[in-house]
Image (cartoon, rainbow, N blue to C red):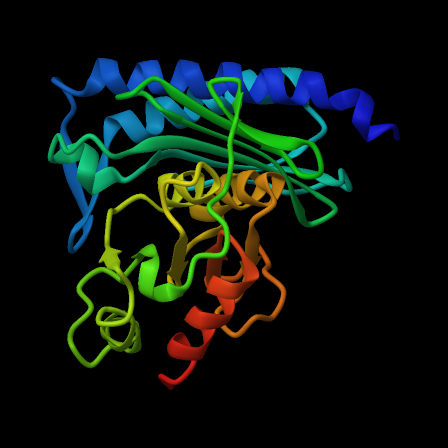
Length: 264
């Protein structure tokens, strides 16, 4: 299989699907109904409509590929080395509360490794794209990472589990880094966090509570930009594992690992 020859078709299909899904999300903003999936875990009709559109678009072009999505999508039979991992609405709570920091995220793994990513922010009409080994772009403009940023000068972001209390290790990690970083934030969208590190808007991001669809697209984009993606302790990243540390460079990754791994 000449995978390079497939790249234009794969990327175009992902971009088209993400843009269609983003349009659906925006159409739903004034008319969705909300149901409770769990404490602080809101799901809307928009999620399902967005995912349905993405699956229909991609599966129509690549019927032999595998598919995994947040809203109950798991079509992983067969032996295709390609697996599309879809988050039809990353940042659901932000979306429900009309806080404009949410996105559509589509990742493609090849033989289990991050390969291609597309993240679309419909509120700003920003399309983040990347293929590992090829480069990463925002609206077709190549993105540049920040470099040589010590933790004391870094803007970093963390994801915390829903309903985490002060005894949660994730909260303790957050508090460990808080006095050492220039700024530490929590945004509610892992996909955009990863895209923003790739774009040089953030320096680092970590979480221990992500699902594959939260991180597949963003990890591919950041790796395509030349960033560093590992587990918190520096071990190799795997998209099916919830432990992620994403940084602009190795110096910051080392600085953060030193703080994040002192919490049991």
